[in-house]
Length: 138
Image (cartoon, rainbow, N blue to C red; front, side, top):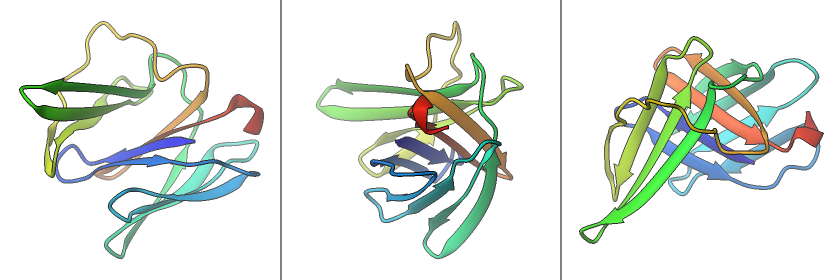
């Protein structure tokens, strides 16, 4: 499972872990947690950072909606960008360099979201969640 949570300003957290069954919890490098339950309908869950919990419901997304990721090293700095494209084509995302977070530029000419997997996206106020799970687990 690969997950990404952002607010396009101060939060840009990536999550990676294995899943076993319909429910799982993963942690980011900064200690945030993403708890998700994937059943026959939309996935539900909670993102928690610094004691603040944000609930979400995430339906399965259809292209071009989905989770996009890009990374590059330039002039000795590593840039990691994430984009969540919502079903109505609005985009949320951020680029992180070290501890600096800036809003991602808008994606144009969509390519393929992170491939071969089912993607769920949701927006809960200013927090946006995108994650992918193996199709066999839906």
